[in-house]
Image 1 (cartoon, helix red, strand yellow):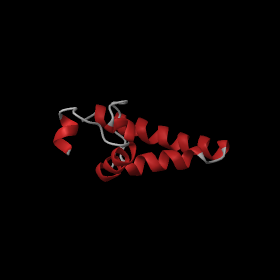
Image 2 (image 1 turned 90 degrees about the horizontal axis):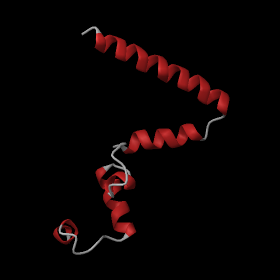
Image 3 (image 1 turned 135 degrees about the horizontal axis):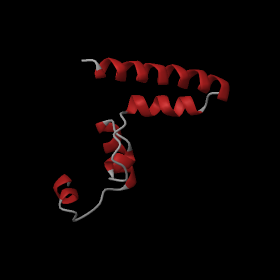
Image 4 (image 1 turned 60 degrees about the vertical axis):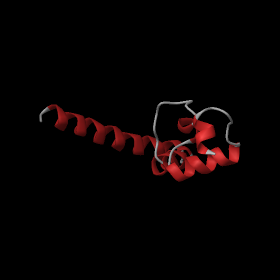
Amino acid sequence: MIGRYEREEMKPSIDTANKLAEFLEVSLDYLTGNTDTLLDTNTLNRILEVQQLPDDVKDKLFYFIDMTIRDYKAKQAYK
């Protein structure tokens, strides 16, 4: 069956594609080639949870994320 998908002789159903994405721990968009961004399931779930937070909480969270990314990049620049 997978060989037929690879040869583009047939396409999996949306349910099958969703199960494959879950098994591979990638988004369905990544699996189907709609995006080049690979988000693992844990990251994607966290992003979805952040979207549900109140704006003031998101602002604080983004502040700490930005600070952490900035510090990481600075450390990498000096290696």
